[in-house]
Length: 197
Image 1 (cartoon, rainbow, N blue to C red):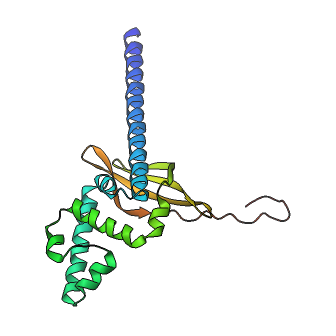
Image 2: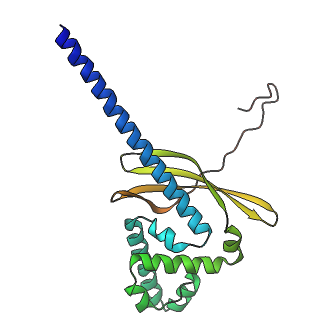
Image 3: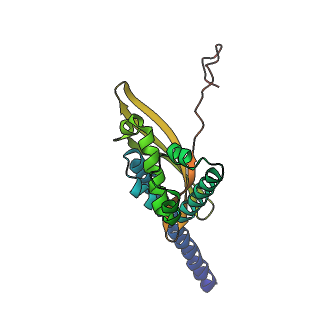
């Protein structure tokens, strides 16, 4: 009987240890993903598109390249190549763009976009980006909600949004597109009770 209890005790200790290790690993993943998301948004706000590109998932970079070049080919077929390049702010011709790696094309597109944003891009520099919350989605994806406080001449402006991160090899990287959080709306207080419903 003592042998049975000691085995049960060992089994309970092992299950507890495995749970502790798994929980610790999940917290480490969450912290790493949150730091990547914060660094990515900080880089974008500060015009550091090279860092943002490095923090973008390779699948996303590949998809962006394919879509951009497809849109460029369509514009070229319609006789609007110059207009398309002007609208996207990219300063390269079609041959140069075709030869670019997904990373290089992302950088060119983001620099063009930032240049076209003008004063808005400059105003966003120095934004303070913080993580509001994060959530594990499946085994290899984490959704991170962020808040950015941007100083303007009229006072601080707060922007909220979210990013989806996924494992790219062993590192967390930002996936396609920013996930925007819906605005938080509060119902007016109930006149009878004064409580918010």
